[in-house]
Length: 60
Image (cartoon, rainbow, N blue to C red; front, top):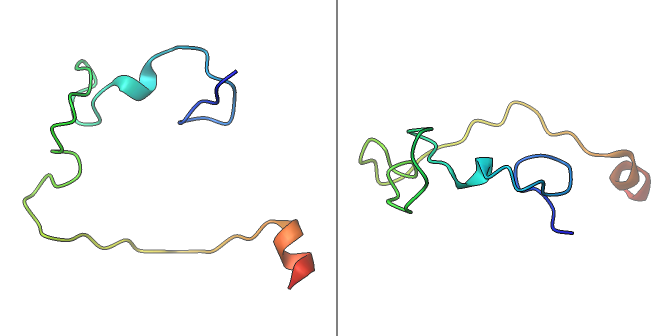
């Protein structure tokens, strides 16, 4: 069984992953507007916190 790309579960064929992020009534057509909505050349990501699971902490 394939895994869901949005949630931690098996795929239930809900098709939620196929809808456009900007218009939830439209199926994604790979236009790319969600990747560069304001015409910027680059984006920045603010990282508030880094959470490591217990397995990684024990090996450090």
